[in-house]
Amino acid sequence: MKDVGIVMPVYKQNPIYLELALRSILQQIYQDYHFVIVSDGAPSETIDVIKSVTKGDKRVHFIHKDINEGVARTLNVGFDYLMKINEIKYLTWVSSDNIYYPTFIEKLRRALENAPEEIGLSYSSFRHIDQKGNFLKEPSLEEFYKYQNQPKENLLDVCFIGASFMYKKKYAVKIDGYNLEPVEDYDYWLRLTEICDIVYVEEALMEYRTNSPFSISTQLNNSLIQHRRWRYALNLARQQARNRRNIPFMLTVIYPVSDSTDKTIEKLEQLLEQSYSNFKLIIVDYSMKSFTLKKLLQISDPRVAPQKIQGASEFEAIRRGLYASNTPFTLVYGKGNFPTSPLALYDLINNGLNIKKQNLEGIALVDEGYRKVGHRKVINKESPVYGNLYITESLQKLIN
Image (cartoon, rainbow, N blue to C red; front, side):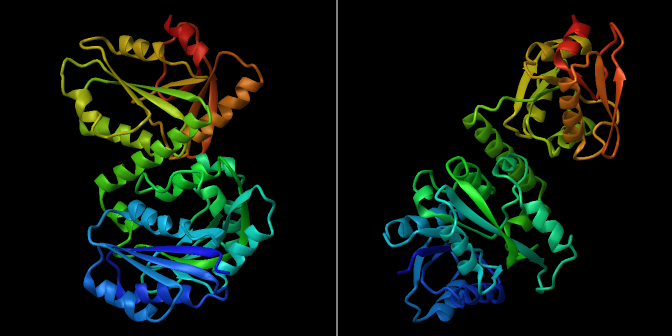
């Protein structure tokens, strides 16, 4: 019984990478699978490689789409085909430039086969390789294993599942297919793990090729526009997951702006690059100009709540933002050294939660440098200090 279904979406690809990827699947120790290769408007030379390598293999089903529609739609075409095959119990998808070890299918399948019923997703570690197939310098596998071995709830903060995975068909049929490019896999894991649990296979079962010429990761690294698109989709996936799970925002960031200069935009970018994501951002435009806010909002983010208070003072702009703050913590943003690292908000919030547990009042937290958090007493009637993390009630007392 062929109880595993595999999809490989293919667009443009280096023929050497493609052949290696195909052969690594065809030469798996576990052979009872259906292998669907979907051409996403691939050129003729790519199709020729596919047909040459897979010729005569009855496990392979080739689907050709004339138009390039992206990874998500291409995956859905392949999985729509597999979902109709009753004997299939397990599903996965593979990339056309990665290399899969001979035990890839066997060990991920076994992890699901031997797991309790509520386990719906298995995943393993993997090695990073460059364009020539050389291993990249990276943390030891032991450190990587520890990093990946996390509870499913932590997926909201980081996608530790990675590129080596398999999941049960019976859970996949309960959610929609892939969407939200270019984070289609991350969004899928968030939705899938809301109805099932996960199991980690502590072993590298594949090689992930970085900076492959036609890979999405290369496009993201080489284009600010594509990076912003990725970041928007990433935060949208997280925010949609929090909405489904009724998880409220923890932090309100108030960003009063009076211009749309490069410095103002750079500050906005630094904030949106923070690893901590559970905050809403209130951009309050208090300038006399009509285009300031419009220019900033071209940098899209699903957590942004724009406000316009034309010709007001900076203090009035902060007050306006504070009216909309209904979160445990609030931070006024835009001046000073904060943030000193992409982890600055994460560190401030962790320390802020400890302060709330101790019922300490009148304390503001300060980013004092890379991974360093200090604290100070809030002085009565002081003006809000930029870059300091306040318990919202404390800041409201100052403003009012």
